[in-house]
Length: 191
Image (cartoon, rainbow, N blue to C red; front, side, top):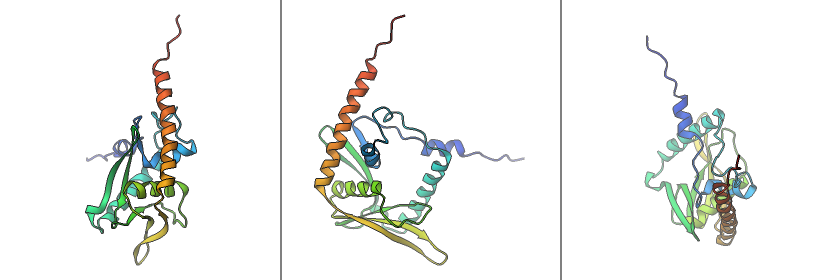
């Protein structure tokens, strides 16, 4: 008899909590840092996603791969490391359409009708980091008789706003470095 194979541990490991490094910050964390969802206390020990979140990430990966298979693969999933002072901001654009535009695909199971603030900030950062004048958010929609990339919204490049975001991130970085130093140098009480 052939037994079933449980892929759950592999899936959780693949899409589990991402390790963070002080001084290297992900574009996908920028809004959460500004909103206070990522704090100096939890930055280095992120909460692992629950199984529903892991399934959403897996589904998103499959959908991205499907859409990217219909586009020019050379322009897909392009990574950039953007230096700012003594830190780095890392991001990966879904699709660099041309010299002026980049596209971001949002794979929510629910149909979207507006750009969420965290998507807007991510796209704003990508426009400056990849030097594109416009970023567009599409949602892949698979209907009964067609597949389309539904336009959700766009963002115009604004280097001034991106600079303010970077300055805010840098202030968080300084608090994080100070906190990390204090935690490492705490002395245990004498018994």
